[in-house]
Amino acid sequence: MIYIFGCNTRRQLIKYYKLRLNGHILEATFYEYWDADVFDSFISEVKVNLIRLQGQEWGSMTDLRPWKGGDNEFIFAARAELNRLVAAGSSHAAYIIKGNSPHLDVLNEVAPSLSGYKRKLFSTKGEAAEWLTKAGFKLPLESKEHCEQDK
Image (tube, rainbow, N blue to C red; front, side, top):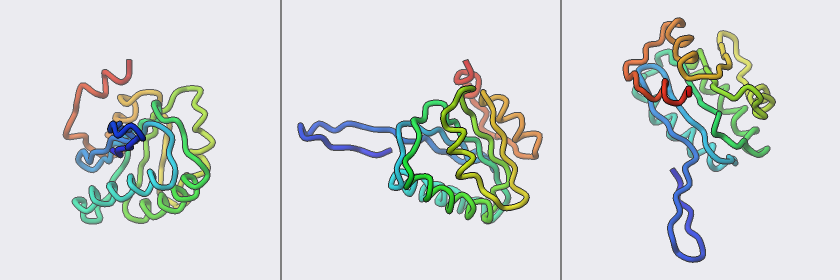
């Protein structure tokens, strides 16, 4: 989370992402509009979470439904860093998007190009979690969140 201070000295909270490591699945939800600074903050937090996996294979589940996109600097930073994450053990990525998402082009532009990496688009978190489970990943912290956010 990032705090923005306005001229009136009132503190306003702007939430750009939610992130947690759930077993061997990195779960994220993106909010608002991203630039390279927001992405760098997110990736730094991702790397801290991945230290616990000690180089083991992992998957990700990213909910992009509330996201408002990113600028060209974000795209450039994401393209380079996502290839590094695949090299560091990311093998499966599930993206939850709206059916008419304007972010499909961005997803295609930043998609890692390394072999062995699989990604798939879903319309609900439940479908994404099921795909990751079938790929061998377990979600030890099942929550009502998957069902509630699918409505």
